[in-house]
Image (cartoon, rainbow, N blue to C red; front, side):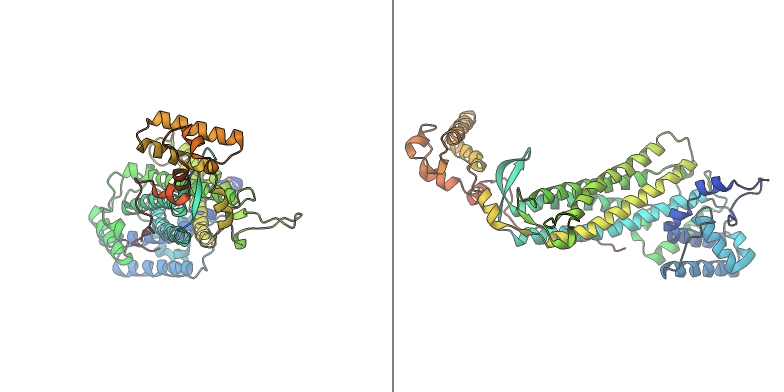
Length: 465
């Protein structure tokens, strides 16, 4: 039996049981309960300001809402699956506490206004939490980079050895990616504005001043400063209930974070293979094989990589849902919640774990040192040396290319060639210069466009969840 609904006066027949189960959302939108209680509390205060509730009625309704909120915080709140949605569930819980007075709680408001309010506050609060998790990740990258600051690593293009880089430059690349993600989330949070008073679509009969005062007091009480930094009164009621731009924007930011996590995971997986053997991944984040006793599989990183399809799909799902909807609210928009919750929860879990994993990565210095002895990694530095000797770049490029090919064909290392052989490729090449140039310290130090290697100061979010 379905619980008491917020609608139904014009209907003679009961809702079809299968259709009710198909269309209900309480099984997932209960995650918005906290923010729906916020909306109801503000609405009660606005009704009092407007003279539609007396002080005693407002006090009793607030007390009932506080009871539900306490139940939620003590993890005793279990969604009632016989309710259509979380708005109905909370309404019924209030009615159990205050009886018929609860019939006044929904006075002159719509679930259309509630749900957009709830989702905006959800995105705001989860955004703050994601900032703290990104900060942990940035700190971990800093830690790993500084721990191995004197290590040099082969850099790759096209998955082929290219040039030597410092390990701090390598970890710094991921630092820069996640730093941009941090800034995107931070900007999203800072510009958050949560409106109230749209009604179903046309606005509310409750005076704007009443809503404004109620919202102002509530924001001051909760300390949601960035939300309160802008006008929180609805600018255009149709746009407010019809738009999910903020959901799509948040999902887009999360998709970018996921892309960076996936790329980093792929690097770590590759570098931990026997073929590379640069990294030793911590066992705590790996699993074994049920058949092959020797296996140490990078399952967490593979799952991160695998989750990328889900995160991208969540973004595309909401974009596709919204692309053809007429103004204003349509029930299709109920489909934005599961993708939103899915992406947020997945990203939060991944960020939390990967920050711990990174701190426990160990480098196989011996293996890395052997690889950076590869003479081809220094071909570019030899070319640059010739350029600074006055050789045209095209000629220098050609000469070094022929030198490397000769080395391969003859099976002789460039470092072992005599001055006579080297000068046959270019008169400026000498054994002494080749020895000096073809080492990682020289290669990294020769890059004058880069700042001096140092530990990057990680970002510190100003808000907490």
